[in-house]
Length: 254
Image 1: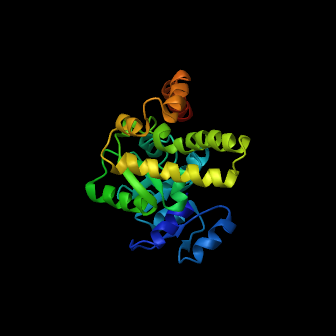
Image 2 (image 1 turned 135 degrees about the horizontal axis):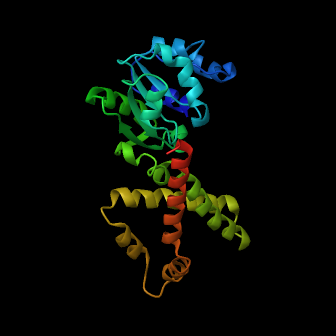
Image 3 (image 1 turned 90 degrees about the vertical axis):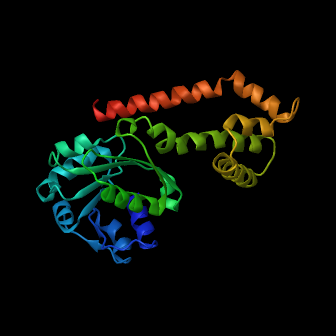
């Protein structure tokens, strides 16, 4: 994800020196060819930068922050894309006055189609927040949410690609069973997802209106919808989201 953001920035109008640190030096070689300066440690990177993007697994973040702590000052902006990690956690491993913006991204960011939720810490000003937005929006769209909803939003945009892929698998597997080429089915269903998403965002219709638009009385869509209603699809999605949120709180220790 960090590499995707760097590539997004390099290919945008964003103008700034970019630094990176990664324990696995092999991962930095493609980035250095883009003009990114490779640092030798976490503390060196933080010392060099006005703004720092944390793009590591949540399980190792405390170790990373402890290593960088001495270089963190109140004027530096810290942007975290570590799932489930709060601004308070970052401050507890650095300094109490650290300026923190938390981000919940998703994997389509790697193709420039990310959907990221962002929340600002109490002491983050408008200029710093807009700067953070510019970084993350280089790989997709950004929506601001309250900081106390960053765990709840994980199900909506962070984990939801996996849920959508599982939904897609059901249609592709069905196509294969009835003798339709799987590659053709994948292309048709994927384009249907893209088109349906555009209808959701651009048509001006509500979700219920869009469902009704596809559903002719006594037709094929109604027959399929009846089975989804029998299976309590929306209730299952709600339980899925609740389980996702519950696990986010467990991982954060709250």
